[in-house]
Image 1 (cartoon, rainbow, N blue to C red):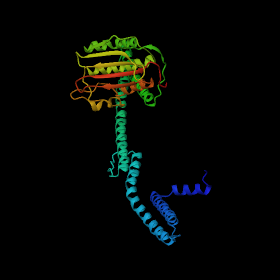
Image 2 (image 1 turned 90 degrees about the horizontal axis):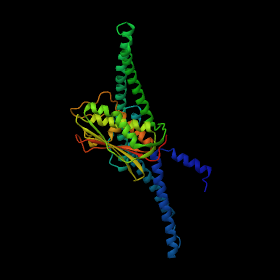
Image 3 (image 1 turned 30 degrees about the vertical axis):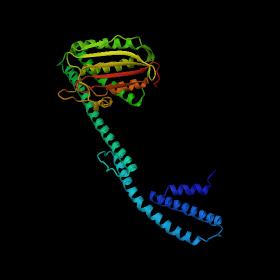
Length: 363
């Protein structure tokens, strides 16, 4: 049934009224329905009893007047208690929009409003944490870029002034610093694509086991230099449709992190297998016996620009804290994921990559 045009206008008018007025009108509406029902029931009861009709209009009018006044007054009074915390929430959201994240609202006793206030407080805390990491990102990027730029400037000025000889060694040094800047730019670009889910995948049928072996061999020299054992456990041939370059990027990150986590004499193992539940997946597991991760930090390691600090162990030099964020973004672009587990500090870490045998993610 279509509502007449006048009805539409009335509905729009009511929706634009203040909440306190609408609460009052709702109480009045309930009262009118109740009194109307009582009147109909009284008439039906009189007919049923055969005592004739009793005129209840004066009683109904008096009850209606008193009831409307009482309902509206009660609604306005109670709405003040309801609107007060809502006004505080509104003020808090305005402060959040202005970039002020330090205001924590008092949680009211009413459960529904308490849930809303707690959500706003969590939002403020999350935004404050994001802003803290953003500020640290700017500082770290500036630091990472300042060092090679300063070296490049010094070397170029030195060659221009005749202090340095423009020989092969000098050009090799210039190339190293330029490569460092390029890697930083590539990492930031990959981070942006990871957060937007915009990785371009060139997926082909790939032997995952062979890819893992080849990637591990690329890094074996670094393991040998640090006297850390790298063991690639023999496994079945696992073929999946994926982007081999992107997955190799993931494996390099995981194996590099495992190497950093281990002391001299440590051990890292890599296994490849297939799991059928909940759907056929290739599973690559990189496990080390290094410094481990506290349970509270397992989720944080995938957060961009987060570098977990360990007591009496400095953070690795040159790390930007975005490698695992990028790695997880690549895995999820393939329709898979990366998970971390650790028994605790000093007890090693395992990072598990799950990749569907058929590409299900979006490129």
